[in-house]
Amino acid sequence: MSWLRRFQERAEPVVTRVLLLGIFVIGLTAQFVKPVGDALEGKAYLGGALLSLVGYILYDQVKELNSSVRAPARALVNSSRLGDFVSEAFEARRVEISFLGYTGETLYSALYHRLEDLSSRPGPTRRVVIRLLVPDFGQPMTVPSKVGERDRPVDDPEFRERMEQRCREYDGILSQLAEQLTNAGRVRVDCEYRLYPGIPRDKICIFNRQQVLHGLYDLSARMRLHQMGDEYYDPKGYNTDLNMWTREGVAETAVATWTKHFDDLWLLAKSPHWRQEASA
Image (cartoon, rainbow, N blue to C red):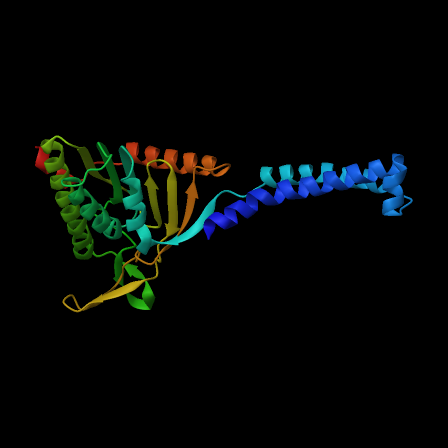
């Protein structure tokens, strides 16, 4: 019944204004037209009329003030719903999806299936740009890492290489799919991974420069690899709650800020060595 709720929200201020204005007109008329005054049997019509007029003016001012201080259009969504946002983004003629995080595993699955669909059901989409920023796993890291004595993080090159290989596989599959779609001529698709220094703390997704999702990874999350016999700090993002901003009202500033922040990081980020090796 969302249509009914929207109707009520729009109708409420109109009805309130009409009632206040009506009270003012009746009170003022009763002051100067005796039959009306006798019918209402009142003596302070002018005062009541003026009071209703003040209420009418104040109502408009309060509505305007409330609108001006409204908080940004932000909601909380779970990372498990990223597929819904990907599908919605692909309803546009130009699709642009940007990601900053750990390995992008949650987003990768949704992107893969949607890109596959483009070959048979392109819809309005004619241009797709996908940018993914992941940590530089070639550098020593505190997270991900091995859990050492007294729960201290211990850098583990083997585990870092394991995470890098996962990103390399995602990049290879998505890039190959993008090349096939571009060669078919119906849709031009570009997909690229780049690396940023540091630990995977933030999870950021930007859809068509219109919606921004941002959350924080659980850096204390652990996993045990039986084949390696150790426990590791391994951030989990599938169930991460994300704040959402959309380009509506004052939230437009928040979206623009996050988008510029990502663009700046993208320009500073380096291409992964596996892409450099492939182009050599």
